[in-house]
Length: 408
Image (tube, rainbow, N blue to C red; front, top):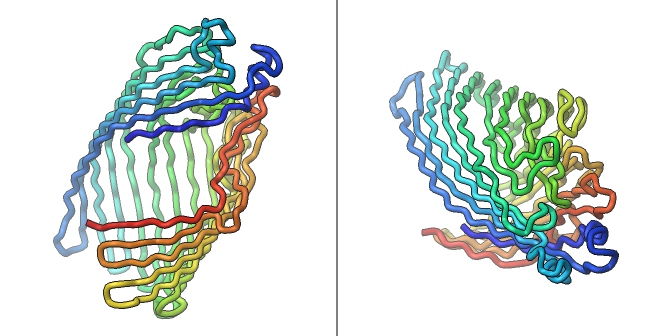
């Protein structure tokens, strides 16, 4: 897979004014190329016999290579401003090779007609090698500088426990499971004293107590859950050494707790309404770590979310259906980068679509951001540098289009 991104970097012009003089640089851009080659394979063996014991075992393998190439320049070009000493404003190439192999198994046993217990285990080993090459005035050298290859080798066992009690139209459950998120390499290095081109894995224990219920002869479905998660070695975004870009480091520990609710109602043979939301009572760091203090909110985690949708399904003939959908999403405010005062504000978005579906093809007329609201997905702020104006990631304006699909 190949991806190419050209972004405006004019927010760093105040910094460049301090290097080349006020008003000399009128524009700055950054060109990012991403090349990804990935192979993934999974095998599963599942029991088909009747009885209280059911099981699944399997193996998983992943091999991926990624190249991230970053090239920045300005108007006038940096080569003209420096008499040819620097050929580019910013050069950073990252080669990242990753492999993971895992074996897993899960077994469930019906203790009684109502009570079922589940136990699962997943063992995996992953290796990573990363090589970084940099150049340009931000790194103090026009000649490419290649760092030593960073290597990591991690093995982990993730268990899962679950109990469920099924009363027919109402079911209660409890789960406890350990999660793992792989480490990686930074596109841009973390600031001193870390100066890190890579970051380690983080782990999480999650606990959930919930219920699923049917009402009105199955025409209404309710789901609700209380959850608590304990996070260790949290991967945390911080300002990088390059203004306007972020790096990831391993911070301290954190915890998250809250509630999730979901309601689905079949209003008629043709209409369905869906409503779901979540609210976090707490989402914060537990101890002091780089850039954060105990009690600080977790970055990138919205306190509340709300989703609502209504769908109409009409069978034109046995072979053709018309499906219309109107959906609303609200995402609460969140912090983006540790140590940065900016907050990404809450936003709302309304989308709609009308789709004609046949047995093996579909055509959909869609409109996203129907009310043409300005949506800020990420507000990075000044990154701790008062001369840097800040950066962000905004959502697209109202977009209307047609999408075709083919099943084969």
